Image (cartoon, rainbow, N blue to C red):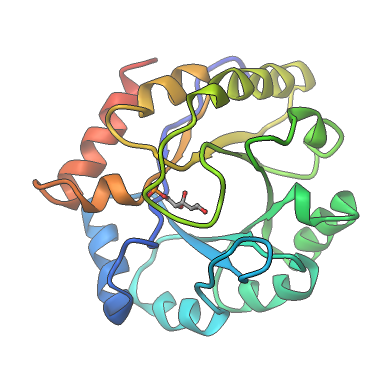
Length: 227
Ligand code: DX5
């Protein structure tokens, strides 16, 4: 990874979308100019919420050409990984906290032909991924505690984002830094300035009175203005 800033990517969460119209909702996000779609997969155990099974994602797959990534907030990612790749997710994001053998889990995702990424909950130190940066193309720094959309951004994660960026640069790793939780017009600059280049947003996109396209364009512009 060079010290050059990495391209800003907008990866909306469909958590706030209308679950009765998900095919249309992902098509609307594509039209709004997002770069990929993030599916917040929750198993009711790792986090106290339950969301998308692989069949729901597979049903939406034909509606857009965008890459899908599955944020696996689940206790047994190794078991579920093949199902989400088959459903059409090109990237799987596993939580370091859910993996007894993280190095092996990430290698297993690559063997499935998918891109492996790892997520860290707010209290988990960056050091948890120091020895697997060669196995991932992205690290997700959670800026809320996982489980629900619409939560307040945890600004104390910004030094953690900066610490991760320094580690990635020191290792010369080709790794994007993603942030997820409370990302919107008032918080995106802090996260981008700290080193994040992939932005997951849900509530802030759907609550924009000027619509999704305006929200996506504004978010991207605010992040790029920090460069
Ligand atoms: C938490 C979820 C949320 C969601 C986006 O488990 O991962 O962070 O993606 O939420 P908001 O509404 O804060 O953008």
